[in-house]
Image (cartoon, rainbow over all chains, first blue to last red; front, side):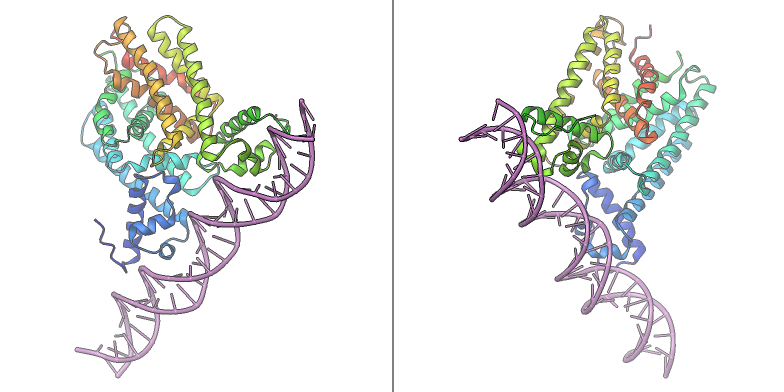
Length: 202
Length: 202
DNA sequence: ATAAAGTGAGTAACTAATTACTATCTTTAT
DNA sequence: ATAAAGATAGTAATTAGTTACTCACTTTAT
């Protein structure tokens, strides 16, 4: 795939680094991706990475930026593609699932960052991302209630939490089975149950 | 809390080691719990650990055994304490949530083990545990269908996956908020939505 | 007395980061 | 147009710090 071309402009090199980390995270425990492993996959020496990033944390920060941008823009596009809140929730769910199926390492990295004890920069970025993500879900659920599509007595916060958890559950199942494609297959079936849980009686 | 008594019988020392790991996993990223950190918390030198375990992996294996035993027995007890499948599902959910609230490091360790690339012993144990756990959920859901409590057209596999995912979602929310007790507070509200999703129309 | 439990000082392997040096592009002066 | 000069990107070896694990020796309980 990658041609391992040497002497790329710095910006391009940084972009490739980020994509490489995302790729590696799909194959191994994100928390033990070493700078040596990243460099090897790129066909560079380990030291070369530090020409483009001041330290490893900065690499992770760049990855989180990449993720936040791509995920949110994809999700926003999905929301805009339909016109009812219920349909938007489903489109958002499927867009997210599609993203995860393409980049299975991503949710694992996010979850892994959240586990860190202190207040690392990447961790804060994940919190921000999930916050912004949650806003969108919350907005759709409230619009759905107003439109009579969803149960007006629905506990919005719980519904938001379950929306995210549902995807997290799919990720875990795919880890269990060692089969990423499973996510795409199971997603509609699982979402159907969720949709029923938040729906109005009719 | 622990009195850091020296010269304990081997079996007792092993038990304390396991509990210490579970404790540490609640405070820091499980994947960077070092043998030095475990020993320090126990008031022992690092070398002493290797009197009782051949290697670090064996410690993790013992922890997984501990988890599997305690979680399943607790869940089974909850199931036996009520008499309808629907009530049993709820009791099982709450028992699991209670366990997680007491030992927040546990789900994070399980998830972390699943991430490893190869086929480590602890990973296999987690797969076995989740398999056995899933069986119980599946059985209850099918009994619920037969009893007319649950939607007879319900997709059982998806419902099982969502059951586990729901808890995983609660764990993630608590990591986000940095507040474990949140799990117990949110659990009933989230379960209510799930219950509605799998229920018969009436 | 002796076997089990713990100590403390090691080791080899690995990790992120640094550095002196080299190769390759880009700009500029003539 | 092109040679010289400067800037940028990559190399290879090395660093200090960590990690899991070992072992000769000491302490303790029975």
